[in-house]
Length: 379
Ligand SMILES: *Cc1c(COP(=O)(O)O)cnc(C)c1O
Image (cartoon, rainbow, N blue to C red; front, side, top):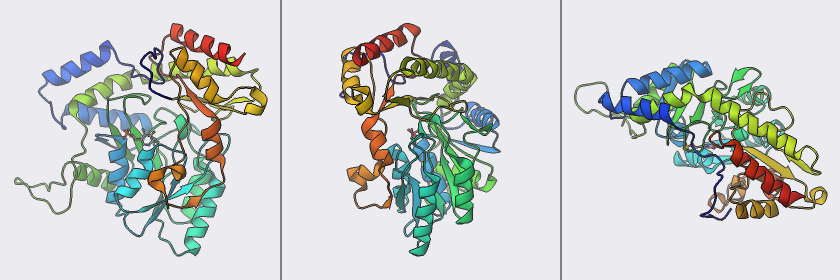
């Protein structure tokens, strides 16, 4: 919670080693030290293939990917965009960059993912109010896919696009289909703390070739394909570096191994809390499709006799990092005055939830340190 200089076990530290060094060095030696080059192209192809989409556009961040698809679709002032309230600020920031109005939708108790019932209510109310709703943005919370069957059906019935914020769910599946392959387009993030990293970076994933081409153009200053610098629309400098793409290719080669390690922690946490009264894992009992990016517990203090705030303080003392789950966007000062359909669920999860060390670079000895600290604090 507070920054502590003696933290020895981190929530989700980057997991990089010799393979990453080798790939990055090779990219530098190739001379492609630029936001263009063969590693960037190959990284896009490899990610598209892994997720099963036709197009992937490598960008400087997941936020940039969120921003540019909204720009390309012409979403802007006068539009309302329903999105998860229980999310990281980037989802909402991107909607505001283009001048549209985020409309917050609360979540399901078990998973923290956008509630289909509340989305339906939001879309019905917005339609009755005569609002224009070009797109909705659900978020796959901590690496668990939203209920895509329900969400896609509701959006289709209301004529809205679905833009999936899969920043946290790369490597996860829903109904056997990879996260990032749903809806009109998806965003993944390769930030330093995500399931795999390019230090900073992200991608837009889509089967829509025109969208992918336009986003790529927008990300490279919207230069027209002529010899001189010709511009007919406002561009951005958002392209992913070839060097970072090389790092991403090494990470992608290790993704399954890293997913396995995170799932291992999930299983150990489940065992650790199996008999703890009032404690559950956010996401529910079925995590077969999750990427287990971060494991978070939700605690009912009436049953547990301790609070997540107390546990967090004890973990900090023991050198272990922990963090509250996302503070709902409708509670953020920066979102004052924005509306939505809020039923109190995300507020409760925020108050009683705690994210625990889950990184694939965590060692078994470090997990033992986490486990001992938890047992001591909760006995
Ligand atoms: C990390 C994250 C993002 C932003 O990704 P960046 O690559 O850091 O810009 C967007 N949405 C969610 C839900 C995230 O967790």
